[in-house]
Length: 420
Image (tube, rainbow, N blue to C red; front, side, top):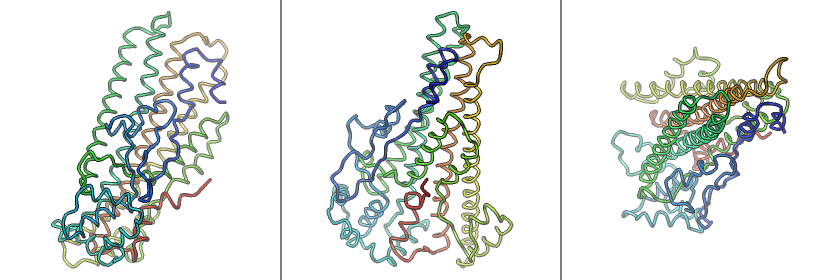
């Protein structure tokens, strides 16, 4: 084990290093389907900081709460049932659909099988003053997942700071060269990390309430979106954690691992790919904008289309930039760990705990940078999906011929991520 090689270093690093060498990994989770009884939607992860990363706790619900989790199909089903019913349905009725043993029949009853009608309502919902009652729930669904990721990252950062702060206090009592002012300074870092975590949790809870309301459910409903859309990221992040725990780091392997990150679905207008424009052929951006705007009649609508397509192209570029940033932060962290573990130079005093604490603090900062890069990466992917959701309807089209194809455009991550 890589952590075992830290024994020759100072006592402080021996104590701190396992927190860095052990990747906090979440066990596999599954979305509860409509033909199953409601059960715990998320299994609390084990390992350092597990308590902080429990989504039930992050949501502010009592311990032991077993929320229902739903996938995008169920989300759209509830939204459509709400819009198609001749009379308003109660929240209890909409939640009862999730317990139906014949979900396909419920979807058909809601009219999803009539995709042309769904398309019309979906596009109408994109107008400033929707003609129909249907409101697209996908943006709220994606936003909840993104904010949950941010809350988890903030929790993990706080866990690391708290552990190191305890070691600072312990070593300050000995002749370690750690002055009380240094302990107080690090206590300020812990307070800042805790404040950031509380802010991210509040944002997640606000987003979760908005998600419930978008489905016509009361805020506070014990219901969470299933995490399947982010499963591809979790798999790659776990693989990067396994790579970083190796005794020997082959930095060329990082490119292959990062290359397995999910690829968002493309946007095409006039045969021109937005992904190609964003990554390899930015000179064709004007051609893409012109092709996209041909589908609308007036100048104001054309302006809106061009603006949304530009945002989409920029979102794709930002996603690629964040992939490169993650690769860099992983390399920097591994390089720092290799330097710490390397045999000491002649004359170096291994008993200086102050040096050990300084190194461990640098390692904590490097780990925090990796976590932040992961957070930004997921946010960037969510932004691509959100902008793509806005671009097509602004053109007055929905480029899918059936319900399954529509859903598959969201499920790209869960279904098409390359395996090891």
